[in-house]
Amino acid sequence: MSAPQQLRQQEQNRSATSSGRSALDLSNATWHRLSWRMLLVDPLGMLTRLSPIFVISLWLGTNRDNYWFEFGLLGLIMFIAFTRWISTSYYIGDTHIVLRKGIFTRNQVTIARERIRSVDTESDLFHRLLRVSIVEVGTGQQDSSKDAAGRFRLDAIASSAVTPLREELLKHMRAAGIDPAHPDLQAGHAGEDIARWKLSWSRFAPFSPIGFGVLFSLWLITLQMGDMQQRLLELGPVVSLRAEFTELGQPRTLIAEALCLWLVAGLFGMVAYAIRYGKYALIDQGRVLYVQNGILRRKHIALDKQRLRGVEMRLPVFIRLIGGGRLEPIMTGTKRGGNASTLLPLAPRRDVRRVAEYVLDDEAPVRTPLRKHSAAAKRRRITRGLIPFWFLLALAVLFRLERGETVDKWIAWFILPALAFFLLLSWDRIRNMGHNIVGGRLVTSSGSLQAKRSVLDADGIIGWQVSQTPFQRWSKVATVRAATPAGQGVYGILDMQADESWALAEAITPGITAEWGTIISYPRDGGAPSISAPATSQPPSA
Image (cartoon, rainbow, N blue to C red):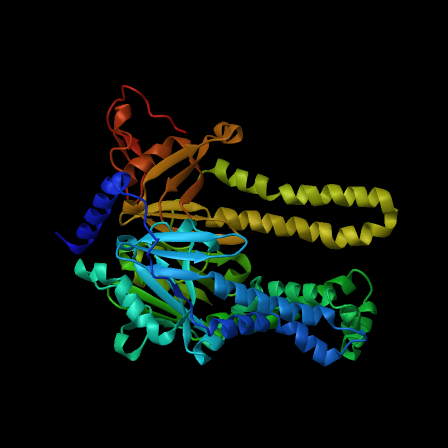
């Protein structure tokens, strides 16, 4: 029996006997606390995230007579750090590990040791200076649906104790003949380099929401600091720039101010992107893909290839226009909707494709043209894409009735460009819409503002759903969704031909339509689906 089969057999035995097992007895348990250095690391980390408050205060000064806000914030930070340390304890038993945390809301996280599949580590600058690390235990199956309260996360463990703790938690995998994924990228764990971060990749950051998020956070901070925002607006360079913009006249002034705001947000975005993904590396260690990233907060993540079910290339429209994209894994045990296990951050599209082909060990799913959808599906993309424009047009009409002819210039400047913008988005959705079956994998593509191309292994699909709205029934199209325990959980195909929907499911999951007495053929390399035998009970199209 192979090692993975032994682990599965262990889990089945545990499930079979779980009903008769008594409750876990913790009366005589030996509980451990986190390192006392957490009392320093936690406040320093929170102060770093709030550092803009103090930097702005020192730079601009303030005319307040008291500083209760700053002192109160410092006191709150110290209190939170102390309560986290005093209320957190963990227990390493023979069959289970237990984590207790929280004072006002008491949480207890219990994991059977035979369910542990990974022990990941991460550390920011202060963790490394104080020689501690963050240790997170993963089961590889349920982690994707857990929130922060349900995760077994130890912050912080002395660095010297991390390796012994990891060896102890993963010894059951070695007993089954499996070499556990090691999260620490050191000289002794060399592997094949797949990709490494380059400074030139920062050029994609201004076209992502990263910078606007940082700018919005700074705006909220200055909003809480008396007249700080007004003092910023009264700075000499800001006053001069606003005066030059005013001379342009409306609506050019608004456009110039928006462009200036984007440039500032872009600068913040480049810095934030470099801090978050600097020193990124993707290394192949045979059974495991290692991902590391971060400058101030270093993360080391081990991705087990056995849990990999495909990849997803995310190509937002503005990033795509300058030749960029991002690559995410479709795998069990990752955080749903998050980027904790990003295979490749914002990078040139050629690198995204190259890494995707390497991970899939096949270039066909990445490069093969997709099967285009019907004219009815294209009309639906245009109709739905113009809905925001009709809403804006209605607002413009109401604005015109309220203000009269004085707003005609604004309407001419914004309504017609808005129509062109939404038409282009609709055309882009049509261009990106498609699907295919390549090498036993389902390939889907959709979207424009957040366009993505997903490649999902047939073995990773556990169910199918075909649905139709009244408008879709009228257009003879349907939405097909493939359910999987990996990644986002559901991957859909929008507006494909209704009479081909179950043929696609049959091609990926043979025998799923056998109960209807129909043999449906959907060629994997192109061509139209066909029914090769008469049916005693016709399968539904939706």
